[in-house]
Structure formats: C-alpha cells, structure tokens
Amino acid sequence: MHSFRLKTVLAAAAIAVVSTSSAFAATVYHATSNVKEGAGNHSLWFSGDNPPGAIGGNTAGNQKNHFKFENRSPGFGKFTVDGSSAALTGEVANGNGQAFRLDMYFTEFTGTNVGYKTIDGGPDGSAWTLYELDSSRTSTLSYIPLTGDAPLSNFVLSSLRGSNSDGPFKVQVGVGANDKDIALFGLSTWFTLAEAGCSSNCTPYHGDINIVLEPVPLPAAGFMLIAGVGGLFAMRRRKKAT
Image (cartoon, rainbow, N blue to C red; front, side):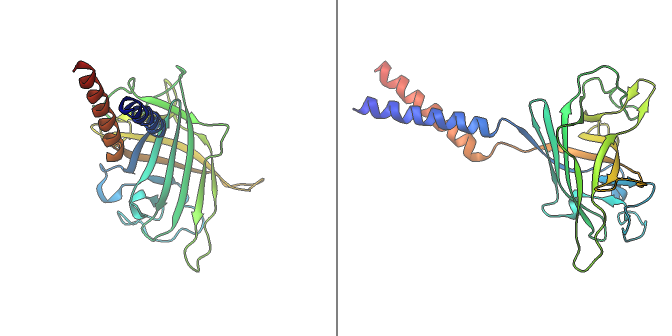
C-alpha cells in the first residue's frame, strides 16, 4: 500500500513537472531602454515628424518622440521567445506621459541576404538571432489616452526598413545588437509605421527600437517543485537499496 501511494505521488509530481516545463517553455526577457545615451535614451523612437499631437520639448530625457518602457508601470516591457516565434509587448510613454501599447510579433529569419547594423569595435553580428515581422499577425502601436486629451493616432508597424551593402536590416537580437552598447544583450530594429485605418494620402512615419534584454529567472516555485520530485525519486531509490 505504501509503495502504491509513493508511486501515485511520483506520478502526480512527474505530471506537474511536465506541466511546469510546458509553462516555462518560452524564454521571457525584461526589456528596458538602451543605457548608452544616458538621459536621451529611448525604447521606441519616432524619427522625423513626431506622432500628430505629441506634446513636450526636445530637452534630453523629455523629447516628445522618445518613448520608454521605464515611463510606464511596471517599468519594463517583455520580449518572449517561443521556438521560432517571438513577441515584444508592453507600454511605452514619453516624458509628458503620452503612452502607447506596443505589440510586435516576429518570426525567425534564416536567410542569408541580410545586413547587420553594428557598432564600431563591437561584434560583427554573425552570432545574433534575426527576426522579421510575422506576416500572420498585425504589429501595432495603440495610443493609451490621457485624461481629457485628444488621442494620438494608432499605428500599424507595416514593414522593417534600412539596409547596408550586405542587405536589408532585420530585428537583431544578441550581445551588442541594441546598436548602442557593445557589451549588453539587447535588441534593435528599424521600421515604417502607417496610421491605422488610413487608406489614402497617408503620412508615412519611421521609427526604431533600441532595448536591453535581461532574462526573467524561473520562479522559485518551479525550482522547489523540481527539487521536490528529485527528492522523492532519491527516497524511492534508497528504499529499494534497503
């Protein structure tokens, strides 16, 4: 009877471990702005014209076209990698509190016609993982209205942009890939935005993303469960030995 109970506990624990492993199959990173530029850094940047209705000046750290994960709770975005798919999600805001919800979806790029945007003295990019926009899902930048304000436009991230003599740029992920600091693991990409719902005479917008990525550790509960199962198996082996 005792043996049956132990087998039942072990089986249940094994199922729990499989379930836990499935839950943590994806790798999750916290995403924050690059740090190389100090006060002028950004997670997402509108180049050229600002989004219509953006308010604020252009002093370092308060530019109306610089949007940061750090300016919105909880202070970071999430980059999630699941096999050959990835997603960058979270909320970014400029220095005046105007905020967007960012939802970008990627698929891994395995082609050879590609250019790396590298930093002088940094890695050549050959070890980076590259992604392109997932054509099966729409990547969006959705405005989060301030109380009483006239909302900014919502945008669709319609395509990636930029290239060098080697080929077009992709979403680049790796050490030095955030295009700002050669020593940090990060992500950068360059893209074109279109106003959501616009069908003719639409003003094109360009932007980029430069972020640092830090892996999110497995929650303590997962480690405790795995250690507990290991202990049960060890007890079972000792019982057999006696």
